[in-house]
Image (cartoon, rainbow, N blue to C red):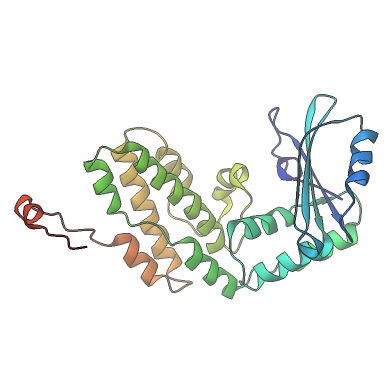
Amino acid sequence: MVISGSVARGLADDQSDLEIGVYWTEPPSLSLRDRAVASLGAKMTRRVTLGEGQAWFGVDNLRVQGFQVDVAMNTVAGIEATIRRVVAAEDLGNRSADLVGIIAEFVALAGPERVQAWQQSLVYDDALRSAMLKHQLKLAPASALEVDFARDDRFRVLERMHAWIARGRRALFALNKRWYPGHKAAMARIPELPIQPAHSVQRLDSALDGPTETAATTLVDWCTELYGLAAQHADVDDEQRHFLGSGRRRWTPPEVRALRIEI
């Protein structure tokens, strides 16, 4: 059993819930989970149960004396399999990689020896850094914003920018061989990272504020610098060329009128 999330990271505020992880040798029965909820005098607001065997996991969202308590459950074998896949760069999806980032900061309530063994196995080597950078820096081309602005499609602009920030922050932690600490902790910890574009926190903050055109330019510049730093540790040439591509050629009105589409 562990504490995880913002409470484990020391970042809890008055809006935070309490996240508890419970890891089983065999998946628990529903009746056992029900007895645990009843013993707390808790009210269950949501229950999720998926998979079976090693791939089983469950979540019980509870209200305990008015407080939100989320109990995430998995098998020991499932957690250890996830750790192996991520550390070997075989599974770099955000769901798996973010889970490993959570494991890195578990605070053990029971079974501290096993939790410590998990954390000691989280080796972030050069090969993993290279693979993670290539994975996270597959960004939509910056030239796509020209089309979005020409169409006055501000929602699409913001959607692209948010995707760049989400991937860019993960890439920034990978660049420093650090496990991604979740969105809440990420901005607080970026100043600690030795390798980063200058003034990253201020520039990322400004990318979510002010005139959209200015924010987009700021973010494109930041991503470009991030590619330059990543290139010193990984082969991201293809990803960088895609991001900085010159964009599409515009059709002229005569060309549009001359178009013929055969079906």
